[in-house]
Amino acid sequence: MNYVSTRGAGPASLDEALRKGIASDGGLFLPDKLPSFDISDFDTGESIPEVAAILLRPFFAGSELLGDIDQILAETFKFPILTKALPVAGHDLSMLQLYHGPTAAFKDVGAGFLAACLSRLEGDTGSPLTILVATSGDTGAAVAAAFDQRPGMRVAVLFPDGRVSERQEQQLCCWSDNVLSMKVRGSFDDCQSLVKAAMADQDLTMIHRFSSANSINIGRLLPQSTYYAHSSLRHYRRTGNKPGFIIPTGNLGNALACIMTREMGLPVGPIVLATNANKTIAEYFETLKWLPRDSVQTLASAMDVGDPSNMERLRKLIGEADILRGRLVVASVSDKEIETAIRQDFEAFGVATCPHTATATHTWRQLDADVARAHDWIIVATAHPAKFEMIVEPLIGQSVPVPAELAAILSRPATAVAIEPHLEALAAALGNN
Ligand SMILES: *Cc1c(COP(=O)(O)O)cnc(C)c1O
Image (tube, rainbow, N blue to C red; front, side):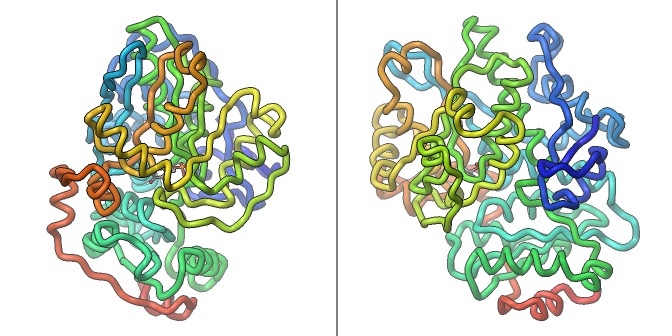
């Protein structure tokens, strides 16, 4: 299988696309042709790793990693992906909980898979690869956890000082020697600019062998399609219906994986994107004009994206807004509505939801009654509520039990170096490798 840039460059192998992260012309990698499947192709697949191995095999054609797929998937799915039925009379509604991994958000799946691939391709060569990642919280934690203690791999996580929650900061700063946590005196945008500046610097790149693990790497996108394949197959086998998915959406990586899964022939029904007050996608569907902008801060902070980078992939794969809006629905949810939804979820379902997941439950409640009844629906739950306890607990009036893995992380010693938002400061903190 070949991978081509959304802007035309290519073709590259999977291994090159994984290593480079972004194409040489600044575009994002996409497979040149999506494989297509019959539902019966999955007859021998029951568990997630089994379904994933069937789904992802064509994407590994020609890769050095082809023979390692089963092990890569076993490493990726060390934690369960759970489906929980939600009690609502007259509806088949359930929740796909993607948050039982080490850092309690769905990003653990993509980060774990990428780490398993990259450490096989690049690991232990004598001069370590340095993964640079700018984060507003969840991404950096997932990447740090995934690369922690991997031989030949080093991670530098850059996060904005004072702008992540206490628990998020702990999750960014509690790892082994191969993870450098850097608290940048600036904003998330400053962190991102620093990463870009470092990757553009020839001398630094020579010394440190930079690579990036941000959400545009194809190695984060591919594994996300596996839980949609598994979940839709399971539902279809049980009911004969193709379930609809409602997906909390920011940079559009998770939702894009679901769309790709449906394109490949899996039994996925309607797809609804739930966004927060950042309305770039919603307005694009309405006005047909793509107008990226600065993000606004919301309670669902991991979805505060004003210029969702995966839209470039979606437009290439499916088409422009006039076509897209026939295939997808987009909703925008305010902070007030998020708060109401967290309360209602707890009362009606007995389940605590994080602010991101609450955009999806709110969107389900807002569906046209006929649409709601015409399909079975699966709410995608992207983070554990205990990760956002400062928001969730006052709303539901009780404490959210902390899952064991998160508790273990929260009890570790944590350290970070504080740096000014300048390239020299970053270079000094990286040392001489
Ligand atoms: C990253 C994140 C999202 C948004 O996912 P995208 O792939 O960027 O659309 C939603 N919820 C949580 C908890 C996240 O960490």
